[in-house]
View 1 (spheres, rainbow, N blue to C red):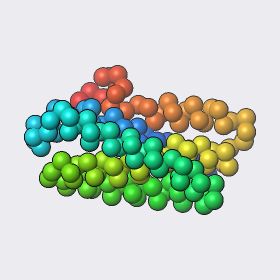
View 2 (view 1 turned 135 degrees about the horizontal axis):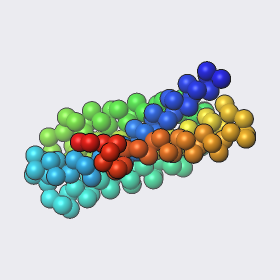
View 3 (view 1 turned 90 degrees about the vertical axis):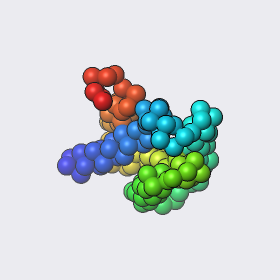
Length: 152
């Protein structure tokens, strides 16, 4: 059981991070636009690049999850997401911000499916619905959650 708990905590944390990155631009948009002199169109494009790369990565990630496994694929993707975060944080231009968001999108693209694939291997069949529901419930408490959860 402790191994299952650890698996759940690790993958839920990764999903929380993925959900955070999906909605973080909405929270930082006013400050980002002001500090980087971005137009609304640039903000929209930069934000959409995350979702475009996220979507484009789905098929290769699905194949990799089946062939290599969720532990290796998800951990590699999280490192890619971390690299994208560093690019985004160090960006001094719209192009750098967009590149960073795109790399973050690729890095976060396999977290949900990687989690579900890992759960299918580690948990009994009659627990999959419960742990999957908990994953989404916990992971969805991010910047777009009610103000009581995020006072800033």
